[in-house]
Image (cartoon, rainbow, N blue to C red; front, side, top):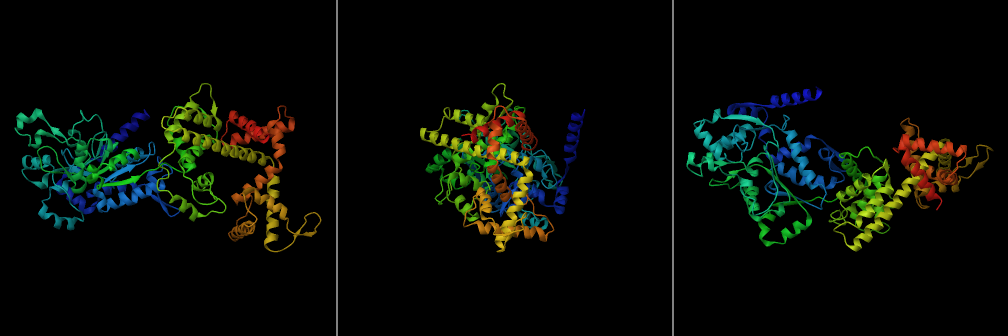
Length: 631
């Protein structure tokens, strides 16, 4: 019953959104709030803004795209700021076709789908309300009823801009139904809907021989020709083409550059002048955002043809590259798997990350920056700090290659290979090795890679395996260190005492004998070296920790084992190195004694309770790390 109750509530809610009144009442409504008269471009931009914007290290992050688009913050910011924002302010870019161009499975069509769905939801809010002449096949802006001569005066009075003319159907109805009385023309609120063909149009290329231009601009209704006697009578014409129905909203051209040329000619005047030709009528006004998407090879073929120069000059091309962040790529796979019926199969931690590492490495380009390899570059792109490199180096690398991210392995291939690993019978859980094996097997069947690329990709799978080995050891390290947590805290405090004496040029007192000694340089370096702090950088590192301790003290907070992530990691690694033999024996022994068994059970429980492992993959991890340590 709850289901039907919710459906009933939704229908009631939709009915409440309905509004019908005269043109006079619509004008009064605009006096209070002129936003319903905004352009289609402004409506899309306001919709995006309504979800919120946050600052992300000096870059704008648009929350509207967060749930579906991952790792494309720079591309999305450019898209919104350079096109949607500018077009919403009536700058000349609104007279251009927005062309999203990028590699396959890069998120182009997802962006368009999100805009369409977002526009539908936005039209149900007061901020995004759309009003149209009732009965108009093109959901006409009612302000088009005002004669051109009176528009400047009325625009000033209402604080709006009026652009465009009445469609042929509304011109006829104004004469026939309303006897020219503009005041009483009925206006209604409409809800943007792709399904109901209100404010959203979609055109997809098909066989040029069978596809008709009427799909875009409407067609003659031959059943009414005898009644009205002329093909130029609006009552004998169906204004039901995609360009007609997309008025007041968004028009999508799927794989636009695959379209026959005659279908694109209509866009020349529509983009520049805001109108298009249909049947035996004068130019028909249309207010719509035209968005198209295509891949790079189609685009290069298009621009190489001189006949396309006129249309090319009316385009704003926005590159949509692949994501280049491992953590964001992992979210893509998580989302796609979450949409499947395979959620009952457990995916071991770091499995998707290993696949993401492989994907990102195939998309990155070697930098000219000295001392920076692809793995370090990948980590910096993902927000990790790499010693010896700064934020300025990151920005320099990001700007080094314009085409970076426009090639490489696509997410669709990776998810196909993960799916093949998931679908195997009798699998309760898959781990990183299963995923990497599936990726490797799939390269033999990949249709579009060369022999050289295959060798390169196999090398990246090996690199991803090494990265996973490091993650696996670290996971076990953390789980074992937990069993020796008191030892870790003691080592941590000992290190802090030593660096305090070092930085203050003081002696340190032996806690047992009371004897004054120099700071234990060997101890400090054995910890710092675990996280790559060089001899030259040790002083700055130690001083930075003391500054952090002082800052905590001023705020009345205690500086403890969890307060400095890098130092905590260094202490854990040092302790793990000291415990390495214990871990090796514990994880690899086939007949553990009572104390070893107890420790294995503690570690397994921690992996399950706090790290997301299941009993199957927790035991597999222990065995695998044991084999790594014994090599």
